[in-house]
Image (cartoon, rainbow, N blue to C red; front, side):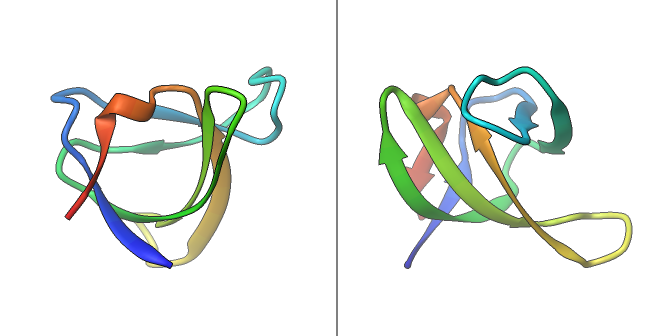
Length: 69
């Protein structure tokens, strides 16, 4: 897996499913994540929750904000 960074300049909403209907988290500006899959104008990311250090997986639709880094 490649490491990526949220370079969008804004917080990215992370959703539970590909319908992007249930928000489950946030990828903050300059936060790192791992891109698991890119498909249908979405990416699946693995990221660490800043408040407790637990890893989560979710979908986001703002692909330009996730840059290799």
